[in-house]
Length: 536
Image (cartoon, rainbow, N blue to C red; front, top):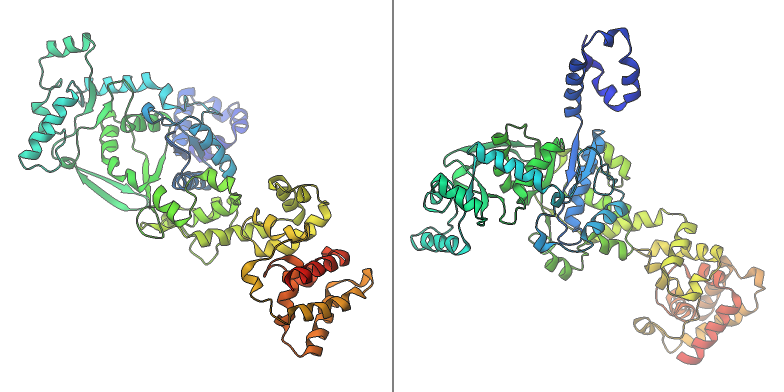
């Protein structure tokens, strides 16, 4: 009888483990065996990481990568780790890390381990792990899989120019060129030690084999292979002692027990370098999955430049500041390269976690459809209770008449207008006429104010003026309008549009008769009188 039968149960129920260890069965098992068996299951616990660089605010593409990692982890009862890859200090942007954390929290992505809530695998900032990387770089040098390179910038430039002149269009530091460069493979050992002792600047490079095929199975793309002759001897440690992405990435993924690396397609070409490092260390390689690009509607990868030209917010914080619903953005991004295999489109975060699988992620790029995002936003906006939206509208409005309005009245207004807006902030403009008499009118709508409009509106005014206050309701108001157009022998729109302009100042909006009933008789008559005087 093996402990593995119960392994997954113990991983998620440590109290049961503690109790069962006292049982007669477990008392007969050596502690070493128990730990070995448990470690077997710990490796099977899914651990994924989202590892952004704090070189700017969280890009919408980065948020999708984080989301897919999160959904995969939750689908497998695993852990989602945030790791900050801040080794490039020259590009560091202040507050970028905080923006990343806040953006994930706003989106509903919960971090299991990270800088703000560390677990057992920290530190979670690469800048705080500098000595760890140096130790592993030196291990590779001892194994003769990496080497010191003392070449100056001028010497590297000269090498590239020389090779370009000889017909090499893309020269690189590789198995061939390294033989003529200044490194620990070509210099005598005493000279290498002398350079190191004198504090000469150097980098540590990976010794990439000249002729080798590097193969791996991508969970999205299937079988992938690269030839090592197309790779350069990648720098692992820079001259400032900081690691490059490649070394830090592999070391951290191994030490943090990352089981699945789910990242953007742009990192696919780096994977063979990482596999060579895993093999050099003798470590198990995590499963790889490279996500499709997010494409611009105008073509090409969605960049900051073409996103701005398309009117697409590019950073996650922009969606927050522009009052998008986070649930809508998450639902939209989930479908930007993935589908559950049916016609469904609306899913909560919990449902997405249950449904998400990598085998349903597409290989091809997904076009960012902003209109589709707004469609999602409208759904999640309208699904919220009117009172909840009323509180949000008050919090973002800069109009005192709205901020100080009666909650019940504002809720009724929102119930009328929310079906006609795409975002919560649009409610403020759409609903402004419920709180303030219009003093100007939409110019395009005024084209519908004809020579006979004043007469028709006046006829209608005389009828509603006679209504008792308690009879000033939508059904009666509509019936009286029908009487006027019947008496005058005109179409519905001949009176409806001028009346809407007079009461709301707009040529569109929620049901006019319900709106008039909510505004009240006194205010409606005052607005009609003002319009007749101003427009006639």
